Image (cartoon, rainbow, N blue to C red; front, side):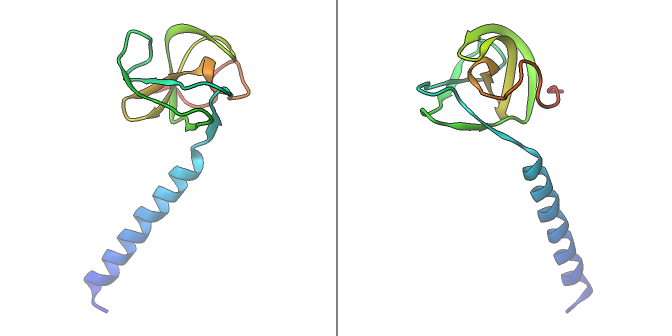
Length: 107
């Protein structure tokens, strides 16, 4: 095996390992039962709806940020959960088990 092939394999293994560690650090949380939750392009109700989650969905929370205050099944909150690139849901509809932040704030 040439030096280039060994280095390529080591680089690929390092990237795969880092991806696995990052994925393991993300937690998934259930959306309130019976809810088809709107996913918005930003942390507030003034942002457009980019999609709607199916009933029974579980969402990853990559980071959280303050935004519009919303009342939902899990209380009233101004916390918005980032569930993907340009995708936010109100934390008032996600069962995180806490009234505050459960992960880092979005940068």
